[in-house]
Length: 440
Ligand code: GLU
Image (cartoon, rainbow, N blue to C red; front, side, top):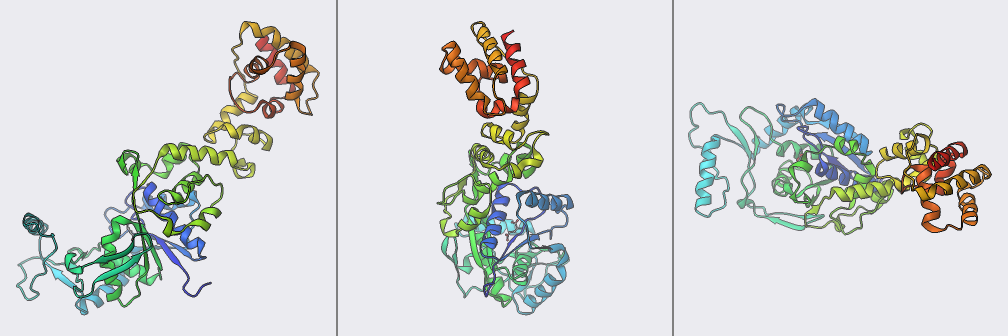
């Protein structure tokens, strides 16, 4: 282990299914930890007890499992309120947290007035000695240090600079005592020793204020990498794409490795390649390769990657998911022709089931010849070249007129797997019966 072992975390709020954007963030955190022999944590950000749901927590775990993104430890923010309370009190005592009494309507009006004057809508602190409006329960803000510029070198975006005077003191706790995301996240990142925070660039401003929270809590600031967001084909991550969960992709026959292959490199300068194992993705993750422009997620690209990955997948990796009877040879014969694993069933039915062949009248006699020749072949050898060589000699046919009627008679299709690989699977008896049936 290196001296400061790397710790990353994926921190979803269980208020919905993981979509492709969340999974991308999870993957990059996971890859980074794995590359450096570090730890990858799953932190369930369930401070919002109203909107968090247990079935979503289960769904998040199931999706990460399906994708193979194993986590080294899990924590739930809802079980950590004591720690937040303690740190909140410490920050209050240090003058870094203060009570506010404005209503949402008052804040909104003030924002509009500032915007109307062409001014940034930054929250204006009140005189701490001002009288407390009667009957109001406070909510709480973190007091930014206006004298310390906020700076960090983002692993993706490069040097970042914020003037704290241009930022609103963030609300960290509601009047009912519930927590907003900002402070618990910083407290947890400190407590869990998170060294790298990798998340979407919609969090950049949050990071600016959280950097001051780290300092106020006396902790070193972790590294940050803010990724450009994903867009759908038609612009921003569309509602449809945002609502598609991993179950939808799985039901459509998309393999986990297709999702990982695409998301690992999408928006980076590295080529997107179909890989059947995560090792090359782990080895190549480097935030220096990530672009600043939004990356376009294309479902068609995913489907193509999926097919290419299946074409390279070894039998052992899919054996348990294949139809009964499909062995290594059958898999090798069929896999170049599939887009999803479900397609194997269709081709296996072509091998073993009943087929209906459409045969042109002028080919019928030829197929009778074929059936006769088929009787004489060495079926334990390589029957297809024997069959076609013999027929070539016997009939003088070549090219398409030689091959196509055979394919049609033997499979009921004009296209499909290599006949050399397919014919031994169809086998002698079935093949002869099909040739005879087609000859009618
Ligand atoms: N729960 C936050 C979110 O889902 C976590 C953000 C973070 O990674 O800090 O946006």
